[in-house]
Length: 582
Image (cartoon, rainbow, N blue to C red; front, side, top):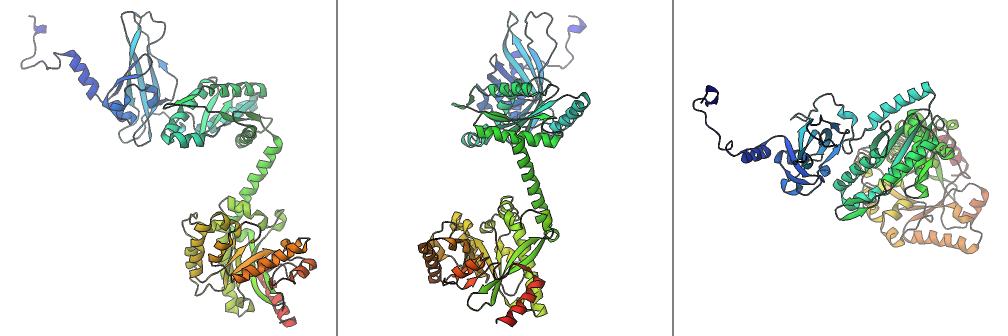
């Protein structure tokens, strides 16, 4: 034997080396590179432990599943050099960047290489896929791959990358005097589907849906995910209405085949709004906003519809967003925008002032079309009602303490404060319920304070509200129910709630028939039987004052007696009133 044929001294042949099949099996099973063997249909035949760690699954669960179930494509395949001896027309090897979901729900960037295993005719009978993580063991992404611009669930560009491309496209369109189109896509009733199949399966469906949409677009178009079940398509260069409609219809056709989830077939449709540059909007934010408004128009028509921008609706939405922004600014800086007024409550028999109600007014009323009370529903819907009420409460406390210190007779009067219904639940923005907030004010007594609770909030949440009301009562606060008669309310429940007073609008006394006016008197007497004092409010003219004078309720309020006044003017009014009447 030649020297080249001799083994080094002491060298032994591994038992595995004597059995190549066992050696290959050991490398497959123990290697740190994820490996999957699939048939030509993409169904998994065999997977190693490394792949299961990457994909966040158990090895016993993967056999028979489509391999694409475990990843989402980030980029189109990059074909590898074909074998020069192969006569196959289709390439059998390629690479792709994909995202695999880990067991903790996070997504891991992975480089997937696919190699076809061919028979004697050079036709693939199986495929070997290898998965190499593009993240370091610490989780830091390797290489300059800009993962920050990728939505991890779908592999699509996210809002950051979309904004960059949209700004670039707008600059190009302006230079070349071309148009472009933005399509706002919202998947119809996807929340119901997500709740039915579960969030994990819902995420997978979104990934499959994103792939279908992507395949329906041209290579120069951008599909991005905004979040949830909303997507944006940017159509560059050919931004005419006709071209945008053709692409939109193609996207909707891509969703027509049912989606398979377990053993169920699901039908998904999309409402799509179309905004054109420069016809509908000229900047990034306006294009997105107008496309969204068009999507709302499409949704009203029914599922799976499209709509172009309705300029009347767009103007209305812009005004709505502008108002909400101004209200948010005002409530976060209340001292700059609001001032506190007080309206007297009157004893109808003596004409004496027996209480005050706090009211807010604009510091710059010319900048607003309506008083603050007109926006209370919007303020509550924006989740800002509690912030505003807390500012009012603290301002009233400051006035009350100031009156006591100065010896003003205003300090002797109880003060009512109107609340939004959000206080009746415990889920405040800072996890600090109303009774906790009042304790933090560190007052010796709260007996002078009356909190007005809206009847609307009670009718929708009697059980939850009763707990809060009883806790407020234990603090010594007096409670009043506001708007009685305008909302349905269980009188049996009302008798169990700790209300000392009820406010009834004088507008109910405008009934033309005597029987209906008698009904109002019956309501007053019923309240009195429950030891709840009725108060008639909103009395703004002589006719109303005459009508309520025949009722058994003697606590009245309205502009007819005195409008809401700043504290300084109210002090003077009260002094004159006492001199004249009391």
